[in-house]
Length: 423
Image (cartoon, rainbow, N blue to C red; front, side, top):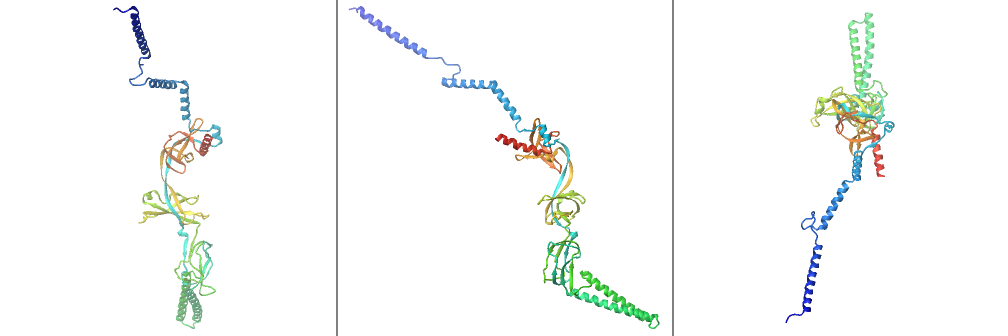
C-alpha cells in the first residue's frame, strides 16, 4: 500500500526545519569566532596584551610631549645654579669683601716644637745663710717683691759672733802696734833707740794690719757687716731685686749654713726652654727668630734662639734649646707650657690663597669662588701654610677669583639662604 500524500509532506517539512536549525547554529558560531591579532602570542590573553600596548603608547606620548621636555630643561638649570650665594656687586663692596685670584707663592715650612717657661737662671738666686744659727726674725714673705740689699731675715749665729770678736781684737792690736811704731820712730830720730827696735815695731804693725784685713774678709765672705748692734746678729740680704718664689724657714728655726731658705728670681725676663728632637736639630740654630705661643691664653712673643744644647738626653732623646723672653708684665709665668714656632725653609707652592679665604662649611674647608651673581662654595684640600697663605693641593686652580678678606660675610649668607628655604 503506497503512502498517502499528506504524510509525505509532513516528513519533508520536518527535514527542512532541521536543516534550517543547523544552518542558524553554524552561522552564530562563525560570527562569534574572531581572528588572532598580530601582537598576540600563543597562550596570552588578549586583554593583557591590549593593556600593555596602551601603556607603552601612553609613555611614548609623555616622552614626546613638549611640556615634559621644557620641565626637564628647567630642572637641569636649577641643578647647575644650586648652592650659589647670591650677592650683587654693590653688596660685595658694602660688605668690604676683597676679591683675589689664587696664585703661586712661597710657603714657609713651619717648625713647631714643645717648650716650657722657666726661671732665667742668670737672674735667679738660691739664698743660703752661710752660717748656722737660730732664726730671730723674718721680714720677707713668699711672693713678695724685694729690692737689692733688702733684709730678708735675721739669724743669731755664734760663728758671726766669733768673727766679729776676732776683728775687734785685731783692730786693738793694730792700734797698739801703730802707737809703738810711732814711738820707736821718734826715739830713733832722736838717736835714743837703735834702728833695730824701729824695724821690729814696723814689722809688728804690718802684721796687725794683715790680721785686721783678714778678719774683715771673713765677715765679708759670709755677708756679715763689721758693725752691728749685737755681735751674733747676722742679717740675710737679697743679692738683687726680684720676687721671693720660695721660702723655707720659720721664726725660731735652727738652720744650717747650707740650707736653701729663699729663692729669689728676677721675673722681668724668663727662659723658654725647648725640647728639640734629633731630627730637627739641623733646622734650629742659634740666632734664629721664633714665635712663642701659649696654649693656656692668647699671648704671643718673639725671641731669638740663644743656645742649642750639644747633648741629647738618654731618656728623652731630645736636646734643649733656650730663648730669653722679656717679661715686663709678668704674663709668662714659669711652668707654663708653650709652643715654639720657627721657619724651617721656604718652598714654592703652585696654588695658594690667603688664610682669610678659607672657611669651614658642613665640616669641609671651602673657598668661595666668584661666579656670575654671587659666590659658589668650592671644597678644597689644603697643604702647607704659614702666617699669611695656605697651599691648595686639590679643588682649585691658579688664577681663580675668590673671596679673600671678608669671606666670613659670604659664609653668613649661606645660613640666611638655608633659613629662607626652610621657611
